Structures are given as C-alpha cells and as structure tokens.
Image (cartoon, rainbow, N blue to C red):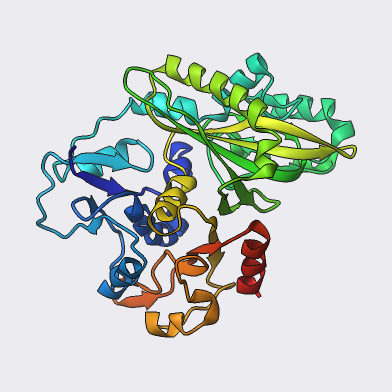
Amino acid sequence: MKNKLYYFNALFDLELGDNIVSSLQRPASEMTVLFAPLGNFSDRILLDVAIDESYWSYLKRYDIMTATPYYQGDDCNGMEGVAWGWNQISIERLSKLGAKCAAPSTECVKMVNSRKFCNDIAQRYSTGIPDSAYCSNVEQVISSCSRLRSRFPVVIKPDFGNSGFGFYHINTDDDLKKASLNCMFQHGGAAVEPWCEKVYDFSSVCTINRSGNISMFRHCRAMTNSKGTFHGIYLAPHDPVLDQWKDKLEEKVQDAALEVVKTGYFGTLGFDSIVYREKNELKLAPVIEINARHVMSDIAVAVRQSCAPAKHCLFRTLSKKRLRLPGSYNELQEKDIFRFDGSRGCILVSPLRVWHGRDCVQPYRNTLFLVADSENQLFTMDEALRA
C-alpha cells in the first residue's frame, strides 16, 4: 500500500458555498493536526501551524499512532493524497508536493454536498425533515414559510455549510422582511424546514470505491448543540439508543448511498440523521445532511482503535473559553481527570499549544478523548470536565 499524505481542509464545506472565511482561517489552521491519527509513522500530514515535539511524544505514551508532520523538503512523490474534502484547493495543495490525488470530480463533490441534492433524495425516499422544501429565491422562501406558519419557528439553511453556519431562523412573519435574507441566494439556493425539538443525533458513514461498491455502514451517536454546532461523538461497545433506530436508519442511508453512486462520487460518505420529539412522540428524520467528505467520527474511531477499542468513549470538543489548559503535558497529567490508565481517563487529542508565527497560543477549539467502563460513568466524567 502507498504511503499517504494527509490534509485537513477544515473550511471545505464553507468554501463550497463561496463564503467569506478569512475570520475562520486561524482556528481552521489549528484543526489541521486532527487528521494525524488516521495515518502512521510512514505517512505525512500537512500542518498550517507549528507544533512542539512534546505533543507527539504525549500521544505516543498512549499508543496513539499518527502520521508524521511534513517538513519542507520531505519527499512525497508518489504518495496517495488524502483530503478531508476534495476541492480544487486541496487537490492543488497535495499535488504540488507530488502526491497522487485519486479524487472524484469537484463538480460531483459539490453537487452531492448540496442541500438541493439532499432534498431531492428526501422527496423520493421520505427522508429528511418532513415538510421541508428547497427554494431558489426569496419569493419561494416566503411561500414555503407561509405554508409552514402553523409550525413556526422555521429554519432556512443555505445550500452549503455545516455546524449551523449561516442558518436563518424565522419566528414571525416580520423575520421574512429582513434584507439579509437575500444574501442567502448569492451562491445557490436554500432549504426551508420546521425547527425540530432534537433529542438524538446520529452519524452514519460508509465508503464508496471507484467501482461503485458500498462498504458496510458505521453508525454512532453524535452530539450537537441546539444551533447545530458539533461538539462530540459517542462510541460504545453497545448503544441501546442507537439500536432502537438502526434498522430504519440502515434502510434509508443505503437508499441515499445508492443515489450518490449514480453521480460518480467515490470516497468517504457521511449522513447526519436526528431523532426529534413531536407531540410527545419520538420520530426519526434520517438523512438530513449528506457529507461527501471525511467526518469527525473517522478521527474518533482511529483514536479509539489505538488506545481503548472495547471501551465507552467520548470524542469531545470544547472552546478555550470553556477549557483553560496548563502550559505543559506534565502539568496536564497532574490533573486527576487527565490521568488515563488504559481503561479510564481523558486524553488531550489536540495540542496544548500551537504556533502562529511567533505567537504561541492554546487552540481556539480543543479536542479531548474520554474513556470509561459505562455510558453513565463516561458522561459523569464529561460533566466534571466541563465544570
């Protein structure tokens, strides 16, 4: 097998929609390191920040295998390029160093990631949020919102984006009169759907090879806040919550994946689904988002396989405002919750500090990996961490 050259282009979803991302460049550059656990010592990873050697030594203590940082002059000719998401930026970045990028067409990738494509599938297979509609202009949005007036609030989601970016919430008819609504249609359409009382998030992942064959699906429970911002992946030897919905979920994501195959896309493919509450009844809304790219559970699973394959694990992100970290890994491990013994504890997956030129800072978002013997024990640890 070829050695790989990894690149985590964290702004991929927003770049598809031609969004202005200059203010997000710095935190996105700090995330490039998170792709490292997918590789091994012989692989390389492109980083947009400098990271002290103590970080890599810290991960090795817990047998977490990683790709090696690329340094200028390293020979990457003939390596297999692996991007978080395939666009022209990632292809050029990897190819420039000699990596071979076996990627689907960027036009195909963009189409599959669009909410229009997801909505088209929803109409054919009864997936997504019931009564959702895809709109090409403000007039269609107003018409759709009028039809849904009895179900306010309503959310308008731009064609491209993730983690709640660019969502526009409609609580009253007056919200439809704001001029900012027109901005959503500068680079595509938008999906209009009732705002649901979400109870659970699920992430389903498969791989499509170049012949169009679909791998087995991996399902796990994801965690997002009320605005849709991702903050965790729960992995367990057995998850009874997921079991309640797995058969229906499997059926619907399989239908959607077969439609994706027809487009010519190949590679990692993710689907987001939710369980929501309506009139005291829990209902599944499968395939509310399609992600033609790698997903966060890929990283979570790679870390789990390295250090805690049979345990209950939580791959969790916290902002630096919520989690102030010490300056060294020795100080970090003096804290009780960060004493990982192979069966319980917490590992810091992201670095303690990164360098932006001469600035040495704690990353804007910090990624942690909690391990325990049970779900209850795991989430009790999470509460203690956040406290």
